[in-house]
Image (tube, rainbow, N blue to C red; front, top):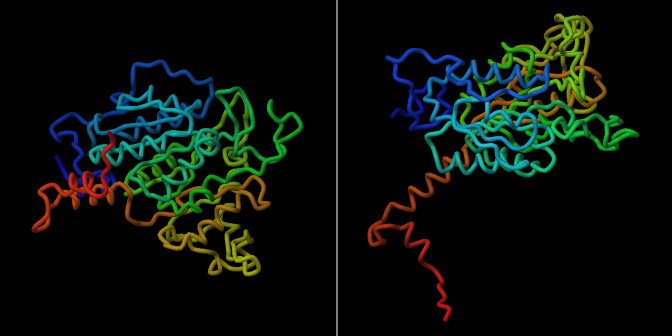
Length: 361
């Protein structure tokens, strides 16, 4: 057994078993199950699955120390295709089940795979409470802005006016911005990446796994059947330079091949897009993912919804340290078991059996 400080990613768990150094290095093939992958041809889930299978060996953990929990939806088939422990749970409840696993089993690296419908509709409360509690888990939210499994109804992230089978005259709902939601719930690690960008996706997954607490990663994921082309602007080679606003901690927020950038908006208190030549590079906002105040990160996240069409910040918005729920719960249990002078040998049993008692006859 080893402590968390000896792990390749110190944010994981204390007590997990590492793969013996004399073993052959793990490969993605060892994390690939014998189940037939059943997604539609061209689905972005394939790219995310391959990236995760290729990334997991880098953790250096035994497969039995990794568990994936999912809810309901196309993305929630994920556990079937990984040769780790896993659970296909019920609609929207994956974060709650993962909370129980993470609290009871400190030796597990716990992952949640969910979709925009599963996490943000029936599972909305479960998601925000996992984030505010800062439970040790990594949540991957696949956002294709549609209900795919049930054949194309609008979802909580579908844009206003979206015409679908359930909204033939256009959606009247204002969509959720998953990153803004996570930041508003005081998420300690919040990021966004893209299914088709293997390098960026893997780098974000590495940082998420290294974080102690809840890591939330929104993954833009294309649904070729019911919402094809939803993210063309940030994927097309001719437009992505102007559409993607890359966030790198400690670096100026520039895009459009360095011709555009973000500055603070003194009128609104938020941020706005400017032409660098008009303001000078010294005026450009430098990204600080470690800022304990999430206000600037939140303002950046709003660019997706604030009239800047087909543009989206991509990267790690926030990465801060704060106590986690499961670490605190285990500390309380350990403290309750320690008997003080003159107290019962098992304080926990005394607490459970003490206080007002009633006899029913």
